[in-house]
Length: 513
Ligand code: FDA
Image 1 (cartoon, rainbow, N blue to C red):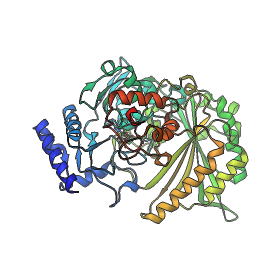
Image 2 (spheres, protein in one colour):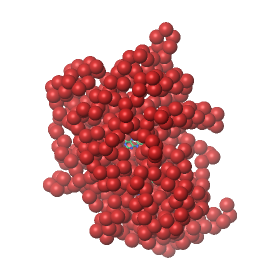
Image 3 (cartoon, helix red, strand yellow):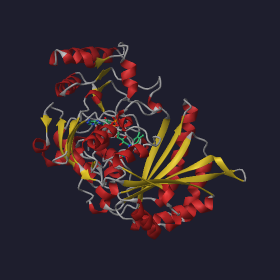
Image 4 (tube, protein in one colour):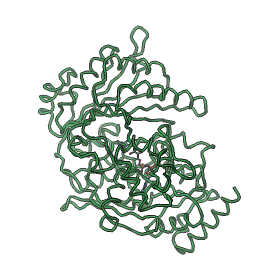
């Protein structure tokens, strides 16, 4: 501790020296009264907000590029690790937790969004949230959008560094498929854009995972056209298990034929409140965004998935921006300004995992899922099945580091959340999700069993604290990136050979074979 206290003093002096003026206003150490509130403001997972969670020696909330450069230079000089934070949604808390002395560079003050309607582009600073991006686009145009995630408080810094799936991905692909330039500060403190960083590094930062190649100061987005009116529905069916099995089984075949204008997802959970003969039933919410009007949607659903029994009353026409508020589960007619609100909505404890399904899962296997849902009494235990296909099938696996493209039928996201602190609750709920994951092994992608880096899961493996082994990293690296992992390692070796930007699952340089 003495050593780290010294390092932290030296680091602070270095910052002042590098950047004599304004930086002192944006430095927080544990003796500052606002240190805890600054740290906790962007914590989204209660698992990493306990008294036992390791805390940063210093938090810097840069106001400009020079502050970030100073933090990078001084951290290297004084042997501290950097954790960059944008929205703080990392599933394993990697943007604000480390087990060795570290500094958090929190981009909360750098979140300007500048929209250029004429050129259908926007520059977005690394600390902006998706809600801020969507709101600022809609402020200028109701027929332009950006394909990215659903939760408005997710930060663009981490989200786009990992891919970015969302409600219009079947039409347009991912966020990373629409990044046309970026501003990055590398390990030498240089500010690079697409031209000066070169196509290899530009490729790697669009999906190769955050905190690995440098600090993304801003992304340039290519905006996409959207109809002035879209149609949404969220149809919940409370099902006896046999019916749930039948309907969800049929959905797996229907999605293969779905038009790319139709996004489709099922949320599946056990309902303790709905019972039949004393037994809880399965609830399944079929959620869709359709890029068109209700008449076309209804005739389309009648043709492709009549078993759902969708009727006009289930559907609502609205603008795309209103749909972002709707899918964020705010009540109808909530003001669009809610998208600008980045305050924490709750800090539940949670753990998530992902899988990719290539072939429809047999009915008997679905029944095994319901049995496992019956065995847990968590605050919430839920599976999300998200249809892939459409545009996702047309983009080559190597076009960005995100490899889960053609051949993926749908993605499964498993999540469990609870509200009791303590080791017992932790062990109970985490072991439940691990058992479910292990049960699913035979029904999902294999060799490798693929996973989505934005739903980070340290169960897949972690880097060593000291020297990171390529072999070890390739265990989880090929799950997240498949064959793109090796190219990511080559880029990392070229741009950060000493592995300054790192975390438990960052790409290692080749020196560590
Ligand atoms: P955070 O700040 O925690 O950063 C995540 C990682 O990126 C960390 O390693 C961090 O160091 C690094 N990083 C952050 N900013 C950086 C920068 N400027 N430069 C370099 N590295 C940086 N995903 C999805 O694809 N679709 C979805 O719909 C959703 N929905 C969703 C809902 C909720 C409630 C959660 C908690 C998460 C999601 N996600 C998601 C997952 C989300 O995309 C993922 O957790 C992102 O990494 C979060 O980015 P943040 O900037 O918020 O996280």
